[in-house]
Length: 383
Image (cartoon, rainbow, N blue to C red; front, side, top):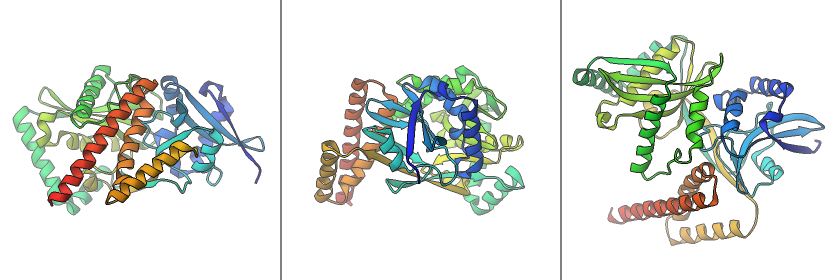
């Protein structure tokens, strides 16, 4: 096979032929069927995310792949990280370089991916979950799920009646693009990050601008919008989704915390699927598994990889030595601590664009991870 080469260019340097080839690659590989792989997502995100470029891979002068990404110091991440729930190299099946090959050609000191779609033997597998509607649409899905998970869905029906009795008639709308409503949702998410001691991905500013810019992009086959649930006159839940083709990717949900007992976020997701299915949407992607309700909803899954490719050197050797020392101390604690810190650091490094902000975020992430590890060790001893 001939040598693989790469050019790193700005998004504006890609011409009509490049975008046509990009679309053809998406059509050829079902694994790339997600709004995050669409050219429109890259075009919008590249205007917003600092230091955004596209790697164009070639063999014998022919384009064989595109990888939109961003730089933070000497490190690289997929474009729009940590917001990007799927990423990889856009290519025809069998033609994409592996993650290892791409990292070597790109020459970054570190390439960090959290949801890699494509070939790699590195990292750890992670599962995302979806609702796939069949021929009977939403009604068929709900009937099947209610039969299989009766207790859960009966509880949500009671929650719906309870919230309506307490606050008034429930009303749902989707396809909303009100900037003030988006700001309300972002404020809810930021408060959640503070309460759960997670890095505030919206503090850096550009991530907020990205959501607003995507929502302002109204194309025939791509865009972003919100759905909202009111109880009486009170706005109780909002969900921001990314849309492409028949795919709806639930991206940022938020609800009024004082009404958690009524599950307004779950009720909104159900109503959003019902309304969107009537407009032809068939796949509803809930992202990574984790929240308990997803196991009751979802009937499909995808597997991605989380990995970090680091250039060999003293820093990498010291990191591995520290992990081994922690593991010797007991119970594989080093690997778990490294995974926790790495995931927090991935978000911090992607969001923050100055060394000072990245350093402050790293100190906070390390402290939170050590505190979590100590708490877990204490529970284990007491048990």
